[in-house]
Amino acid sequence: EAGVTQFPSHSVIEKGQTVTLRCDPISGHDNLYWYRRVMGKEIKFLLHFVKESKQDESGMPNNRFLAERTGGTYSTLKVQPAELEDSGVYFCASSQDRGYNEQFFGPGTRLTVL
Amino acid sequence: AQSVSQHNHHVILSEAASLELGCNYSYGGTVNLFWYVQYPGQHLQLLLKYFSGDPLVKGIKGFEAEFIKSKFSFNLRKPSVQWSDTAEYFCAVNIPNTGFQKLVFGTGTRLLVSP
Image 1 (tube, rainbow over the protein chains, first blue to last red):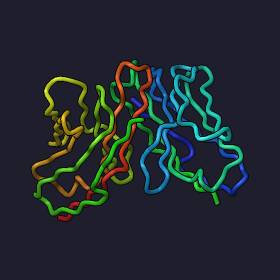
Image 2: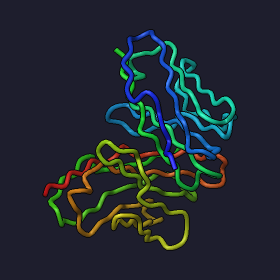
Image 3: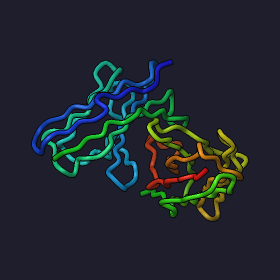
C-alpha cells in the first residue's frame, strides 16, 4: 500500500512568489491534515479535512494560505504571496475514520523563501 | 490551549545505554498521547500511543512509555539503545471526543547514539 506522498520535496522561491504544495493521502483515508515545522520549533497544525470539507482550519496563519481538497482525494496548499517567515517543512498526514488512531505522515515539503 | 514540553532538545548516548525522554503536557482533561519518531531521511512514524487502560504502553522496537496522570507526563523509555535509534523523537497529544483531531506536538528531541 502506498503511503502519503507529497510534491515537491523541496521548493525554493522568492518573497512575493506563489507556491503550491500537493499531498496525496493513503487511498481510502477520509481525514487529511496539514502541519508545518518552522526551523527549530514544534510541528504545528494548520488544518484538517474530512473528505472535501474543512473540519478545522484554526491553525492557518493568515489569508495568504489557501488549502483545497477537491473531490476528497488529494489536497493542495497554496501560499500567495510567500513571505520569509513561511519557510519551513510542510507535512501532510492522513488517517482512517477518526484521527484518534494513527495519523500517517508524508515525507514533507521543505519550502525556502528567499 | 494545549501545549507539550519536551525538555531534552539533544541527547547523546552510547550504545547499550538506557534512554528516557521527558514529555509533559498542559491540559486538565482526558488526552490521547503519542510518541512519533523520524529517522534520518524518513517519514514521521508512530512509535506508540496511549488512549486509556494500562498506563505503561509498549511500542515498536523495544520502546515503552508511561502515562502518569498526576504529573501530566508521558515519558519515553528504552532500556538499551542501539545505533539505529538515532533519530528525532516527538511527543504529541490530542483531545478525544471533541471532533478536533489535530495533534499538538512538542519541539522534538534529537537522539544521537554513538556506536
